[in-house]
Structure formats: C-alpha cells, structure tokens
Amino acid sequence: MNPPVPHTVADLTEAVLRGAHGPDPAQLHAVGAFWVRQSTQFPGTDTKYRNYYLVLRAESAFGGCCLERDQLESAIAEDLSGRSLAELLRDERTPVRVAALDAYLALAYPHREQAQAKTLLLPHGTPLERAKARDAAIAGLLDIRPGMRVGLIGVVNPLVEAIQARGGTCLPCDFNLRRTADGTEVIADMEVVLAQADLVIATGMTLSNGSFDRIVEVARERGIGLVVYAQTGSAIVPRFLGHGVAAVSAEPFPFSQFSADPTPIHLYRAERIGAREAA
Image (cartoon, rainbow, N blue to C red; front, top):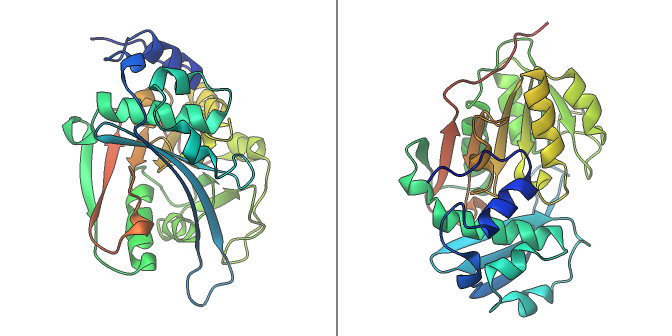
C-alpha cells in the first residue's frame, strides 16, 4: 500500500475515509471516550499548565487531542462512544476529528512496528524529572547549533531550557503564557516566529487549533527543520515525516504526566533534516 503524501490534515483524513491507509473506518468504532481535565505546577514556580484532553479508544489504540478550555463541553465524552470512526472523522468539531484520526492511524501504523521509530522509555521519577528527560529528547531531535534561532510554538519551560542548553536562542510563542520561567517574552503571533526561526519546534496541539497546516507549509517553503512534540496526534504527525516535518516525538496515551513509572515516547527522524545555519 502506497498512500498519497498528505499536504494538509484534511488531505490525510480524506485518504483515510477512502481506505487508502488500511481498514474501512466505518467498520471501526470508538468503544471508549474520555474528557480529562488536568493541571501541573512544578514546586518553586508560579506557572500552572492547564490541560484539557479528549481521548477516544478504538480497539487496541487510543487517539488523543489536547484542546483549549472552552472548545468542548466535558459531556461530549458521554456522547461519542459507540460511533464509527468514519462518522467522527466527519464531525464538525476539530478536536473530535483529530482524536478520531489519531485513533485510526494508531491502529494502522502502531509505533512499535515502525522502522523509523526509536522507542525511549522515560525514567521512573517525579513529574519534573520525567518532563526534563522528555524535553531533552525532543530538543535532541534537531541539530541545534550555537546561535540558531529556534521557534517554540507551544511553550513548556523545561523545553526552553533544553534549547538554551544546546546554545539555541528560543523564540517562544503561546496563546496562554506571557513570559517563560526565565522572563523571556512570549508572543502570540506565530507568523513572526515562523519568519525569523532557523528551525521550529511545535506542539501537536497545533492540530487542535488549526495552525498545524500553516506551520508545515512554512517549513516546506523555507526549507527549515520542523520537529513536533505530539501528545495530540501522536500517530498523525508521523504521516508528514519527510514532507514538511523533519522529526517527531510521539507520545501516545496514557501520557507521561499520568504515571511515575517508565512510559514510552517514540522518536522519528526523516532521512534528511533541513535546518539552515544561523545567520
């Protein structure tokens, strides 16, 4: 099977509905639906991360989508179970489509069976220890050279530190934060970051807010490396590997913050990563 190369998430979704990626999604169902509300605040900091997740289970796979607080009502979890993935892939609500697409592709392309994926077990430890291990692995997916401007779309402070530890200059962008832990101003307009960055690291949550397609488009046009750290859409983003996405840290549900035990992330790298030298 040689499915078409997707240019957008909509392209990928339509290909799945046509059966280009495997089983008919009309024959697969969301047997479980979860809406999770969670927050994290590390000791000694005043930054509180607030997370809201829609998670769908289809057979042996989970599909996850992190979303903004008011994107969906929590009661949605009571409504979605039992519906076919084909129906959910056509849902008018973006997070529902993303979670359904993620669940389908997790079945079609299990991370453990992908030759390009290297599995890394995050260590047993505290939330901060595990976050630092994960974020160091993400930053290590691209060759960050001293002086490079690294756009960070979706700010987590341990990842800011990991970029800086490699000599990069972090250009942070986020809708919900105003400053990083070290006081760097965070801007809301990603177009500014995309125009300036020598390479970009983006959260999978760009799938749920609709900005993923634009980020991939710019990475292709400018020939810069794009790495995506994906709890949201961990099975979706690898379909763009080598076609706008240079590397992926795929973290399927259950996510690392829900456990202290070793849990896997799956690291993908395209054969050729295009990151231009710092100016």
